[in-house]
Image (cartoon, rainbow, N blue to C red):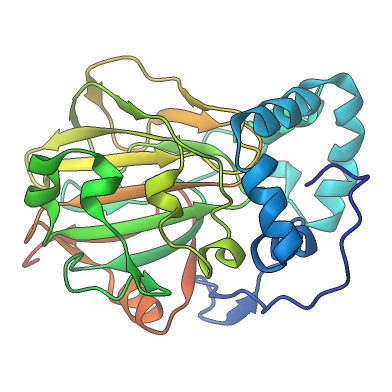
Length: 307
Protein backbone atom coordinates (compact mmCIF):
# COMPACT_ATOMS: atom_id res chain seq x y z
CA UNK A 1 0.00 0.00 0.00
CA UNK A 2 1.21 3.51 -0.86
CA UNK A 3 -0.41 6.86 -0.06
CA UNK A 4 -3.36 7.08 -2.45
CA UNK A 5 -2.80 10.59 -3.86
CA UNK A 6 0.30 9.46 -5.79
CA UNK A 7 -0.58 8.65 -9.42
CA UNK A 8 1.62 6.05 -11.10
CA UNK A 9 1.92 5.56 -14.88
CA UNK A 10 0.64 2.33 -16.36
CA UNK A 11 3.57 -0.05 -16.56
CA UNK A 12 3.89 -3.79 -16.94
CA UNK A 13 6.25 -5.23 -14.32
CA UNK A 14 7.73 -8.64 -14.96
CA UNK A 15 5.45 -11.16 -13.17
CA UNK A 16 6.71 -12.75 -9.96
CA UNK A 17 6.41 -16.52 -10.24
CA UNK A 18 6.78 -18.98 -7.39
CA UNK A 19 6.20 -22.66 -6.69
CA UNK A 20 3.19 -23.62 -4.61
CA UNK A 21 4.77 -26.23 -2.35
CA UNK A 22 1.49 -27.99 -1.62
CA UNK A 23 0.71 -28.66 -5.30
CA UNK A 24 4.05 -28.22 -7.07
CA UNK A 25 2.39 -25.78 -9.49
CA UNK A 26 4.04 -22.55 -10.64
CA UNK A 27 1.87 -19.58 -9.74
CA UNK A 28 1.97 -15.82 -10.20
CA UNK A 29 2.06 -13.64 -7.11
CA UNK A 30 -0.55 -10.91 -6.75
CA UNK A 31 1.64 -8.05 -5.53
CA UNK A 32 0.38 -5.32 -3.22
CA UNK A 33 1.09 -1.89 -4.80
CA UNK A 34 2.81 -3.54 -7.76
CA UNK A 35 2.73 -0.50 -10.07
CA UNK A 36 4.06 1.76 -7.32
CA UNK A 37 6.97 -0.58 -6.55
CA UNK A 38 7.88 -0.91 -10.21
CA UNK A 39 7.82 2.87 -10.63
CA UNK A 40 10.01 3.45 -7.55
CA UNK A 41 12.71 0.98 -8.58
CA UNK A 42 12.68 1.32 -12.39
CA UNK A 43 11.55 4.84 -13.33
CA UNK A 44 14.16 7.66 -13.06
CA UNK A 45 11.71 9.93 -11.24
CA UNK A 46 10.64 7.02 -9.04
CA UNK A 47 14.26 6.33 -8.09
CA UNK A 48 14.69 9.96 -7.04
CA UNK A 49 11.55 9.69 -4.90
CA UNK A 50 12.88 6.46 -3.39
CA UNK A 51 16.20 8.02 -2.39
CA UNK A 52 14.65 11.27 -1.17
CA UNK A 53 11.75 9.86 0.81
CA UNK A 54 10.51 6.27 0.56
CA UNK A 55 13.61 4.50 1.92
CA UNK A 56 13.75 6.80 4.94
CA UNK A 57 12.53 6.16 8.46
CA UNK A 58 10.26 9.22 8.50
CA UNK A 59 8.16 7.92 5.59
CA UNK A 60 7.84 4.49 7.17
CA UNK A 61 6.97 5.94 10.58
CA UNK A 62 4.34 8.25 9.08
CA UNK A 63 2.63 5.46 7.16
CA UNK A 64 2.94 3.21 10.20
CA UNK A 65 1.11 5.88 12.20
CA UNK A 66 -1.66 5.99 9.58
CA UNK A 67 -2.06 2.20 9.80
CA UNK A 68 -2.56 2.53 13.57
CA UNK A 69 -5.52 4.91 13.21
CA UNK A 70 -9.17 3.85 13.43
CA UNK A 71 -9.58 5.32 9.91
CA UNK A 72 -7.31 2.60 8.52
CA UNK A 73 -9.69 -0.16 9.65
CA UNK A 74 -11.85 0.51 6.57
CA UNK A 75 -9.05 -0.97 4.44
CA UNK A 76 -9.27 -4.40 6.09
CA UNK A 77 -12.33 -5.87 4.40
CA UNK A 78 -11.33 -4.88 0.82
CA UNK A 79 -7.82 -6.18 1.50
CA UNK A 80 -9.15 -9.56 2.68
CA UNK A 81 -11.38 -9.87 -0.40
CA UNK A 82 -8.76 -8.76 -2.92
CA UNK A 83 -6.08 -11.15 -1.67
CA UNK A 84 -8.38 -14.04 -0.67
CA UNK A 85 -7.19 -14.24 2.94
CA UNK A 86 -8.71 -17.05 5.02
CA UNK A 87 -10.04 -15.32 8.13
CA UNK A 88 -11.15 -18.61 9.69
CA UNK A 89 -7.57 -19.12 10.84
CA UNK A 90 -7.47 -15.94 12.96
CA UNK A 91 -8.02 -15.73 16.71
CA UNK A 92 -10.26 -12.68 16.36
CA UNK A 93 -12.37 -11.09 13.63
CA UNK A 94 -12.73 -7.47 14.77
CA UNK A 95 -9.82 -5.03 14.55
CA UNK A 96 -9.50 -1.38 15.58
CA UNK A 97 -6.89 -0.53 12.88
CA UNK A 98 -5.21 -2.04 9.84
CA UNK A 99 -2.04 -2.71 11.81
CA UNK A 100 -4.10 -4.53 14.44
CA UNK A 101 -5.24 -6.81 11.63
CA UNK A 102 -1.76 -6.99 10.14
CA UNK A 103 -0.20 -8.41 13.34
CA UNK A 104 -3.09 -10.83 13.84
CA UNK A 105 -2.53 -14.08 15.71
CA UNK A 106 -3.52 -17.47 14.35
CA UNK A 107 -5.73 -19.89 16.22
CA UNK A 108 -3.87 -22.60 18.15
CA UNK A 109 -3.18 -25.50 15.80
CA UNK A 110 -3.57 -23.42 12.62
CA UNK A 111 0.03 -24.31 11.76
CA UNK A 112 1.45 -27.78 12.37
CA UNK A 113 4.98 -27.72 13.83
CA UNK A 114 7.38 -30.53 12.89
CA UNK A 115 8.78 -31.29 16.35
CA UNK A 116 11.45 -33.87 15.36
CA UNK A 117 14.80 -32.95 16.93
CA UNK A 118 16.69 -33.37 13.65
CA UNK A 119 14.38 -31.02 11.69
CA UNK A 120 14.53 -27.27 11.01
CA UNK A 121 11.15 -25.62 10.43
CA UNK A 122 10.12 -22.45 8.66
CA UNK A 123 10.01 -19.49 11.06
CA UNK A 124 7.24 -17.77 9.13
CA UNK A 125 4.60 -17.87 6.41
CA UNK A 126 5.90 -16.55 3.11
CA UNK A 127 8.16 -17.59 0.26
CA UNK A 128 11.66 -19.02 0.52
CA UNK A 129 14.94 -19.15 -1.38
CA UNK A 130 17.47 -21.78 -0.22
CA UNK A 131 21.25 -21.81 -0.68
CA UNK A 132 23.29 -24.77 0.58
CA UNK A 133 26.64 -22.99 0.14
CA UNK A 134 26.73 -19.21 0.66
CA UNK A 135 30.24 -18.83 -0.78
CA UNK A 136 29.43 -20.81 -3.91
CA UNK A 137 25.84 -19.73 -4.45
CA UNK A 138 24.45 -17.54 -7.23
CA UNK A 139 22.76 -14.93 -5.03
CA UNK A 140 23.93 -12.17 -7.40
CA UNK A 141 22.04 -9.29 -9.01
CA UNK A 142 23.66 -6.78 -11.37
CA UNK A 143 27.15 -7.91 -10.32
CA UNK A 144 26.57 -7.63 -6.58
CA UNK A 145 26.86 -10.79 -4.47
CA UNK A 146 25.27 -11.05 -1.04
CA UNK A 147 27.95 -9.89 1.40
CA UNK A 148 27.84 -11.73 4.72
CA UNK A 149 30.38 -9.42 6.32
CA UNK A 150 28.30 -6.34 5.49
CA UNK A 151 25.09 -8.05 6.53
CA UNK A 152 26.31 -9.14 9.98
CA UNK A 153 28.79 -6.29 10.51
CA UNK A 154 30.93 -8.84 12.33
CA UNK A 155 34.13 -10.15 10.71
CA UNK A 156 34.54 -13.24 12.89
CA UNK A 157 30.94 -14.39 12.40
CA UNK A 158 31.19 -13.80 8.65
CA UNK A 159 34.21 -16.13 8.49
CA UNK A 160 32.40 -18.85 10.49
CA UNK A 161 29.32 -18.83 8.21
CA UNK A 162 31.08 -18.02 4.91
CA UNK A 163 30.77 -21.60 3.57
CA UNK A 164 27.53 -22.33 5.39
CA UNK A 165 23.89 -22.47 4.30
CA UNK A 166 21.31 -19.71 4.00
CA UNK A 167 17.51 -19.71 3.93
CA UNK A 168 15.77 -16.47 2.95
CA UNK A 169 12.09 -16.11 3.85
CA UNK A 170 10.15 -13.23 2.29
CA UNK A 171 6.92 -12.10 3.92
CA UNK A 172 4.65 -10.04 1.69
CA UNK A 173 1.93 -7.76 3.16
CA UNK A 174 -0.75 -10.44 2.70
CA UNK A 175 1.08 -12.96 4.92
CA UNK A 176 0.76 -13.75 8.60
CA UNK A 177 3.46 -11.51 10.07
CA UNK A 178 4.46 -13.16 13.32
CA UNK A 179 7.72 -15.10 13.29
CA UNK A 180 8.71 -18.16 15.31
CA UNK A 181 11.82 -20.10 16.29
CA UNK A 182 13.03 -22.60 13.65
CA UNK A 183 14.86 -24.73 16.22
CA UNK A 184 15.10 -24.91 20.00
CA UNK A 185 18.13 -23.76 21.95
CA UNK A 186 19.88 -21.20 24.09
CA UNK A 187 19.56 -17.62 22.84
CA UNK A 188 22.25 -14.98 22.55
CA UNK A 189 21.57 -11.28 22.98
CA UNK A 190 19.95 -9.48 20.03
CA UNK A 191 22.21 -7.40 17.79
CA UNK A 192 20.44 -4.40 16.21
CA UNK A 193 21.76 -2.68 13.08
CA UNK A 194 20.37 0.63 11.88
CA UNK A 195 19.58 1.01 8.20
CA UNK A 196 17.22 2.10 5.46
CA UNK A 197 13.75 0.86 4.51
CA UNK A 198 13.95 -0.40 0.93
CA UNK A 199 11.33 -2.86 -0.28
CA UNK A 200 12.31 -6.56 -0.19
CA UNK A 201 9.88 -7.44 -2.99
CA UNK A 202 11.54 -9.11 -6.02
CA UNK A 203 10.64 -6.00 -8.07
CA UNK A 204 13.15 -4.12 -5.90
CA UNK A 205 15.64 -6.96 -5.49
CA UNK A 206 16.03 -7.32 -9.25
CA UNK A 207 17.64 -3.89 -9.15
CA UNK A 208 19.71 -4.05 -5.94
CA UNK A 209 20.33 -7.23 -3.96
CA UNK A 210 22.41 -5.30 -1.42
CA UNK A 211 19.13 -4.09 0.08
CA UNK A 212 19.61 -6.82 2.68
CA UNK A 213 22.88 -5.22 3.76
CA UNK A 214 21.40 -1.70 3.78
CA UNK A 215 18.06 -2.17 5.54
CA UNK A 216 17.40 -2.04 9.25
CA UNK A 217 17.87 -5.51 10.75
CA UNK A 218 18.50 -7.42 13.94
CA UNK A 219 19.71 -10.91 14.71
CA UNK A 220 20.60 -13.40 17.40
CA UNK A 221 21.99 -16.92 17.57
CA UNK A 222 20.17 -20.02 18.75
CA UNK A 223 22.59 -22.60 20.16
CA UNK A 224 21.19 -26.05 19.31
CA UNK A 225 22.93 -29.40 20.11
CA UNK A 226 22.13 -30.77 16.62
CA UNK A 227 22.53 -27.69 14.40
CA UNK A 228 25.11 -25.65 16.30
CA UNK A 229 24.75 -21.87 16.43
CA UNK A 230 21.90 -20.88 14.10
CA UNK A 231 21.67 -17.18 13.23
CA UNK A 232 18.11 -15.86 12.90
CA UNK A 233 17.90 -12.37 11.42
CA UNK A 234 14.85 -10.17 10.90
CA UNK A 235 14.99 -7.48 8.21
CA UNK A 236 12.76 -4.43 8.05
CA UNK A 237 11.55 -2.97 4.76
CA UNK A 238 9.44 -0.21 3.22
CA UNK A 239 6.52 0.68 5.50
CA UNK A 240 7.54 -1.80 8.22
CA UNK A 241 6.80 0.25 11.32
CA UNK A 242 9.05 -1.85 13.51
CA UNK A 243 10.39 -5.27 14.38
CA UNK A 244 8.86 -6.26 17.71
CA UNK A 245 10.48 -9.03 19.76
CA UNK A 246 7.82 -10.62 21.98
CA UNK A 247 10.01 -13.38 23.47
CA UNK A 248 12.32 -12.27 26.27
CA UNK A 249 13.66 -15.49 27.75
CA UNK A 250 17.00 -17.25 27.26
CA UNK A 251 15.75 -20.58 25.90
CA UNK A 252 13.94 -20.81 22.56
CA UNK A 253 11.41 -23.55 21.85
CA UNK A 254 10.91 -24.56 18.21
CA UNK A 255 7.64 -23.16 16.89
CA UNK A 256 7.18 -20.69 19.76
CA UNK A 257 6.57 -17.06 18.82
CA UNK A 258 9.69 -14.91 18.66
CA UNK A 259 8.11 -11.64 17.54
CA UNK A 260 6.27 -9.83 14.76
CA UNK A 261 6.67 -7.22 12.04
CA UNK A 262 4.35 -4.25 11.98
CA UNK A 263 2.82 -3.10 8.69
CA UNK A 264 4.76 -3.84 5.49
CA UNK A 265 6.73 -6.55 3.73
CA UNK A 266 9.66 -8.08 5.55
CA UNK A 267 12.25 -10.89 5.46
CA UNK A 268 13.93 -13.41 7.72
CA UNK A 269 17.33 -14.97 7.05
CA UNK A 270 18.55 -18.17 8.71
CA UNK A 271 22.28 -18.92 8.61
CA UNK A 272 23.85 -22.29 9.40
CA UNK A 273 27.49 -23.26 9.81
CA UNK A 274 29.05 -25.51 7.14
CA UNK A 275 28.02 -29.16 7.22
CA UNK A 276 25.18 -28.72 9.71
CA UNK A 277 22.05 -29.07 7.56
CA UNK A 278 20.64 -30.72 4.48
CA UNK A 279 18.08 -28.39 2.94
CA UNK A 280 14.97 -30.04 1.48
CA UNK A 281 15.64 -30.92 -2.20
CA UNK A 282 12.55 -29.16 -3.55
CA UNK A 283 13.65 -25.84 -2.04
CA UNK A 284 17.12 -26.17 -3.54
CA UNK A 285 15.74 -27.22 -6.92
CA UNK A 286 13.27 -24.34 -7.11
CA UNK A 287 15.92 -21.83 -6.07
CA UNK A 288 18.23 -23.08 -8.80
CA UNK A 289 15.35 -22.44 -11.20
CA UNK A 290 15.15 -18.88 -9.80
CA UNK A 291 11.79 -19.58 -8.16
CA UNK A 292 10.74 -19.01 -4.58
CA UNK A 293 8.68 -21.69 -2.83
CA UNK A 294 5.58 -20.87 -0.80
CA UNK A 295 5.96 -21.97 2.80
CA UNK A 296 4.02 -21.95 6.06
CA UNK A 297 5.39 -21.47 9.54
CA UNK A 298 6.29 -24.83 11.09
CA UNK A 299 6.89 -26.66 7.79
CA UNK A 300 9.92 -28.92 7.37
CA UNK A 301 12.71 -27.06 5.50
CA UNK A 302 15.90 -28.97 6.42
CA UNK A 303 17.33 -31.89 8.41
CA UNK A 304 20.61 -32.59 10.14
CA UNK A 305 23.37 -33.21 7.62
CA UNK A 306 23.93 -36.86 6.60
CA UNK A 307 20.43 -37.96 7.68
